[in-house]
Every structure is written in structure tokens, then in C-alpha cells.
Image 1 (cartoon, rainbow, N blue to C red):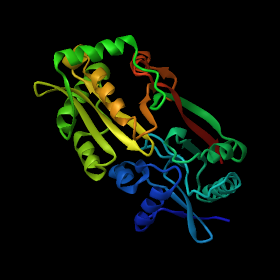
Image 2: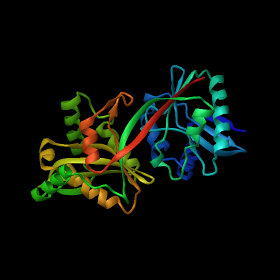
Image 3: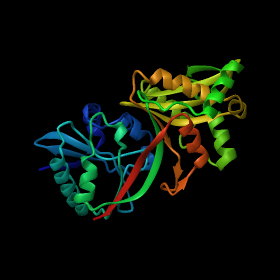
Image 4: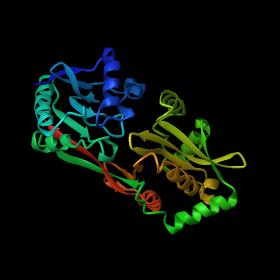
Amino acid sequence: MFEINRYSADEKCAWNGFIDLSKNGTFLFNRNYMDYHADRFHDFSLMFYCKGKLFAVLPANIRNGVLYSHQGLTYGGLVTNRSARAANICSLFKELNGYLKENGVRKVVYKALPWIYSKYMAEEDLYALTNVCHANIVSRDISSTIVLDNRLGFSELRRRGRNRARACGVVIESSDDVAAFWNILDNNLESKYGVAPVHSCAELELLMGRFPSNIKLYMAYLDGEALGGVIVYLCNNVVHTQYISASPEGKRMGALDLLFDTLIDSCSGSFKYFDFGRSTEHGGRYLNESLIFQKEGFGGRGVCYDTYEWTL
């Protein structure tokens, strides 16, 4: 039923056009985003054709005989057209498994797309993973998400921080000063965890230049001094916080409390969900309780990011 082809650069326009019209693709699957770190991954993305028309794509890379969807992305999974139905997707996974076996793949690690990111309901793949691939969930991370038209509201602690920032004269602005934000972020990660941000400053500037409508930076300032900020990814119906950080002075003043109060209000008419991202590490086995406490204080509640695995 399906013709399965490896992605090549010649198919870039067809791939990107399909993502735009799919029922569950986001700009992270656009090749201009995926390929910024192409040197770090051996791409094994797949394109599925039915009766000569592109039916689905799978952003993926391969390492040591294991297919991953995709190690360089926050989430992955099969991206389908709007006509995809459960029976189609079950057939697709049967044929995918045969194709992968023929190409020497011994195992698949599949990061499913959290349901809030789909433009239409699109969990046929999860059904096929269980009933066709007999896959197991090998990790479950938890994010904190606000339903923007049915918000829980801020906790008392977050409200006090917001009010303190207002009283101090903190202002919130859209910004393109990536370097100022990245320095705050890098200092925080280095002092707390001894690590650097996943993206370098140059990579963030590159991606923001490629996707100015999807990647935004908002900053908190006092008398022109940067106190903190957030980089958000605008993905279909979701505002996703990719990076959040504040300076010691910004934390003392409650700068992020005011920033999120302002940002959440401004997004409420245009988006359905505000996703603060995961608060877990090591495949979900470690819950960062202080981090999720902060996100839950803004009204966020749990959405899971699941990873599946099956052997061929």
C-alpha cells in the first residue's frame, strides 16, 4: 500500500510543504529547523507515499542500528495528512517495520507528539504502536500546561512576585537581544548544574532569524537592565517555553512572575495552550520538584511526553 523513501535534500520543498498542511506537524519538523544541527545526527527521515501522493513523514535519525524519532527534537512521531485514519496508520506501521528490518534496523525509539500540539486529533500512531508494534513506554516526562480559556490562576506566591515586580517598576518587552538573555541563562545553568544551554547563542540567533513568526524572546527590564526572559516557540495552538531564566536580581524582584502574567494574558485570545515544558530528567525518573512547583504556581497542570520502544 505504501511506498517508503529515505528523505533527501532534493525533497526539502515537498517535505516542508507537507508539514505546513499536515494535521499534526509543527515548525520543529521543518527542515530549516531540523537541519541546523544536521552534523550531529545521521538523518534517517522517511517519507510515505500512497497512490503517488505524500501521505506521512517521519523525522528520524539512526545510530548503531537504532532508529530514533528524532534525538535532536523535543518531540517526534509520525506526521500525517488530514485523511489519515486508524486502519491506514496500522498498515503503515506494519510496512514500516518490514522496511526497517530490510535496512538493518534492530530497534525503534519513538518520541510521541504530545496531543496538545496537533491541529487535529492525531493519536492513531499510539494505537498502532501498541497493537501492531507491541511497543512499551520506556520513559514518561511531565510538562505543565495552562488551558488558556479556562485558567486556574496564579498561586499566592506568584501573585506576590508579580505585584512586587510592578511596584519596582519592572517592564516587559519583546526583544531581539538574544545575547543578553543567553548570558543570564548560561550563568544560571553553569552555577546550578555545571552545564551550558543546549543551544548556543549563535544557534538561537540563527533559528530566530529563520523562524521570526515562531520563535520569540520576551524580556523583563528595570531601568534598561535585563533581569530575565523567556524564549517561546509558537507551535500551532501552543505557546511553548523553550528557555526561562532570570538573574539573581530578577528573581528577587519577581521579574518572571510579572513576565508570565503579561505573556499569558497577551496569548489568551490567539492560542489554546501555554506549555511550560518538562520538569523531569533522566527519562522522567527524576522530578525537579522546585521547578514544577514554580510552573504549577502559574496555573500549569500535567501533560505527559512519552517515549516508546520496540524491537524488530
